[in-house]
Length: 460
Figure (cartoon, rainbow, N blue to C red):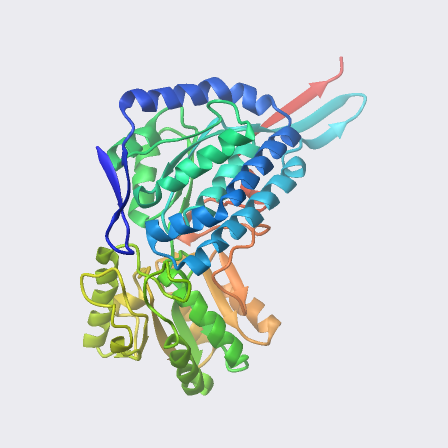
């Protein structure tokens, strides 16, 4: 089977690759199996040196990689290189904390007993990465898995499969032994079979809810673990005591950066009634400053979404909402490239929305945000929790105690105050409800990539 990367920029074919044959898949699995014992026996400090070299190698090619990102998924080239800065931040942090976090947990060391808990590598980790942040999302599991002593097989989205090849080159040039880091180009059927394979000990998946359900069904009864990051419908609550200008600036960026194609992007905003009119006016003015166009042009600030199908899904959400009484605040005529059947989609701000509308309940993954007026904190909390998702939520206020109190009541994996759409590698990255399960990054991220092994040694 041939996989073609169709660029959302102009519909051209960026690259073509053949999916791996059964023989190639078997070879990759056997290589990983053969390498896993020698890799986990290498000192953590030596693994760290190799991982740092691999990151260095990726950064050397940052300009070429940025253009590849743009061609593959449409992000404006002026922002594309920023993904590698985020990759470096996450990777270096997880490498640097590994020695401490992977050390034995000492329980007792006396004349009578020596008791400790060892953190043992799982074996072979399969990372299934998405297209929207093809390097950032992949690195969340690749580097921690390798640092924990696991071998890694990367299966990247068909839209961004060149990224897996870039990763492989970087790790190979860094001196990784055969079988420690590998990749495969696969279709859905072969991916499902690989997930089920007994050589795979853990699956790290970032993608759709339906994809996560497929993973869970595939591993049922195998007792292997999975980390699932499945997106969100992330809300923001703007309180009456907010710095309006700062909130507007950041919430526009949080909703529309990467054309709204971010798992933790802002898709719902709840405004306190006392600041509603001023906020809406400034918000709309800011959104209208976007320039939609060819993302290879360095002056463009909004590129196409990943494909026309995704764009038309968002268009249908907007249409349904407006038919039900929502008000579209952005004039699409200001964005002439936006038209049905095209991957180029105008940003949109919807007011007079409610939770009966798909745009306030179902993940849009595009440049649209719905804004509702609320009377108080309790009403905002209730609406923010009225979602099948729970990845992040943000509270915009000058009152830290109020933010903490509200955050304690929110059903979400991360609570932000006066910030959104950001991932701090020192904090756990976790979702609840349909946003997934498991924990990546932070010190806690190493727990799902290792198994505890207890030693109880009694002196005779």
